[in-house]
Structures are given as C-alpha cells and as structure tokens.
Length: 187
Image 1 (cartoon, rainbow, N blue to C red):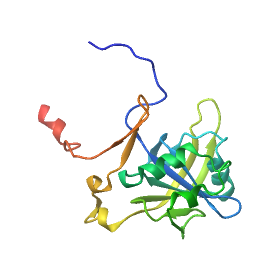
Image 2 (cartoon, rainbow, N blue to C red; image 1 turned 180 degrees about the vertical axis):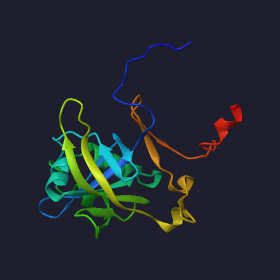
Image 3 (tube, rainbow, N blue to C red; image 1 turned 30 degrees about the vertical axis):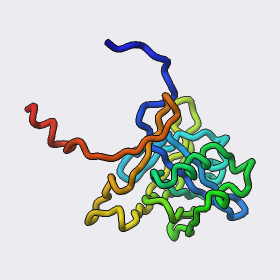
Image 4 (tube, rainbow, N blue to C red; image 1 turned 45 degrees about the horizontal axis):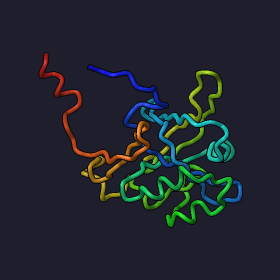
C-alpha cells in the first residue's frame, strides 16, 4: 500500500548538470542545476530563475555549456551549488578545475568533466508557465575514455543524480534493460 508523503520540488532521479558561463570580467562561473531537460534532439531547457548570476551571464554572453556531473567531482559539484558567484569571486578557481574557451559559443568548457554540451542562448521564458533558459545545442563532446565506438559508455561516465527527498547524490550506472525492445515481449 502506498502512503502519502509531502510533495517535494522535483521528480527523482534528477540529472546533476553543471552550467558554465563567463562573467562580465571574463572569469568562469559555474552553477549546479538539477532542473534541466531536452526539449528536442538539439534543444535544452533549464528551469532557472533570473536571480541566478549564471542566467545573467547566459543572457549577456548568449552562450553556455552544460556538463554532466560525475562521481569523481562530487565535492566540486556541490561547491558549485552551495556558493554563489556573486559572493565568492574565486568560486571556480577554488574548485581546482580548469577550462578551455569553446570555439562555438562564448562560454567555458570544464576540462575535467566527461561530457560537454555547448549551447547557444535562444530565449528566456519568464511567464507563469515559462521554463526559464532555452538553448540550442551546437556541439556535444565526450572524453574518448567514455566512448564505446561512437556511443557514450554511460557506466564509465559515472554520472550522478540528485535526490530531492534526502538531498543526496547518487551514482547512475548499471544497464537493466533494452529500450524499445524489452516491452515487446508482452506483445
């Protein structure tokens, strides 16, 4: 029997995304965001309020990079979520991470993270049902060690998810089925 619990702000599991931008002075800003999804094969949506420094940067620079957070960088990932770039000017430097400037959008790519989606800012939706930042994916790159041929080896990435019920991070790995095939057994 199911028992009613308090509704939380999200659905589990939520991807942990690190959104990188450049500040007005050219320094790197990164935020931890769990509210993001694909709208189409090349369109992303980030449910972020305009109060975030990162959103200001996205609107000003017209570009951002979405990184998939991984187990190896949980401490840095959480740091990017608990500290605001408005308050801590050395936020990125204190993470110990490094970056290169994207050749396609005005935003930094964090070298240590396994997957980067370079995005061009499309619009910000702020009405009652608006989702926030909408972007077009211009380029996706993956560290070669996480590829099996031309496909991402998800287990080797060791991506993490956020649990909104306990405020924990969980490792996502271990294939359990074949999409678009296993269900056909019931036909």
